[in-house]
Image (spheres, rainbow, N blue to C red):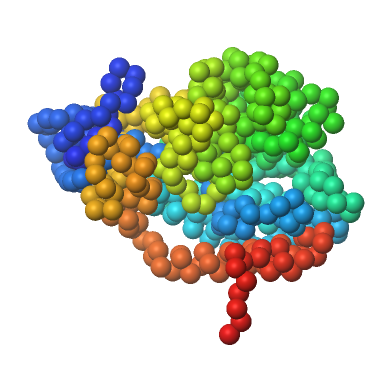
Length: 488
Ligand SMILES: [Zn+2]
């Protein structure tokens, strides 16, 4: 039976674009939307009044943080300090081990998925740091994560991350990657086995995708085999690339081409590819500072980028520029990538950085960013039934409250939300017609106990860095406090 949700503001969809409706409603029946507008007169089973809130398509996060926070530790470090965040050569050769038990890994995933829900994300493709693992992500870990995701009700695009090599700091202090080709092939085999597992699950909310780690951690054999599997089985691939200068230099040294050219050579640069970050194209001032054709190449390929504005900013870089990529015709989706998984703050950061880059106050494309968080993600996933509120689309929606005095005044509610608010204002989340969160509560989830559990897991993770550090520095040396701590 149909459910009707009314709100002061509804971001509907008309003629291929989002449109704003005031004092309107969305009606859905089963997993699909049946009505969006001002006057619903049809049958109705349940009704929810959200009051002063913005009801919009659920946020699509394609580089979705699914582990415990690490940015809080590693977004401050200079180059010497940062070496302590990588594996040492000795750790790679002789001592690598899992920091967490299999059970703890499942707890980390659940903690992270709860965070995504509370921040208004309805569709996600996970990213987790592999630095704490003995190699990458085992098949069983993702089987467990799929089960947790189904229980919580999110829409998932899942696969175990795999790699042929690991970023390390060599004995001489240089950054490099050390390889074990057999592990890469095993990882790809597990990834394909997981695709079969997803087919057996036959759940529309769980989709199988290929999630190899970073481009510099894959050997040619795994890159080519991944591209071939993607084509044969029509699978999406997400591959971190065009992400940094170390990556660019390593790929140039090994293969004699840029990362973008390598993607093309191995047969991966096509409409099934999603590239997180994609910040280091020729336009970037640290590369050539001028467009020599990278953006046109990206756009022509049909590949999508996953822009993670808040994370990029916090590691001192930014997409140069959102407007240029968009103007070139590159499909842009959004990701959170690190804590907090807050795409509203991410949109604010991206919009303001675009103004700085352009040197112009009107360069902040708020609509472009909301499109990226909804329609751009849906396009990357080849899902025209996601990212929009219109009859026939999936009933995936989120509402952000704008009713607190601290939200300030309402003008355009999207501006009020990004300028004054955060994704913490999410008060309702519906996925395929199921209410996964209402009034900040998730059925069957004790948030206070997860807060304690998250802290416990974080401290275990933090204390493990020292074992991997070439310089064998203590935890306090690796992660000094902002001010010296005075002992009691
Ligand atoms: Zn990322």
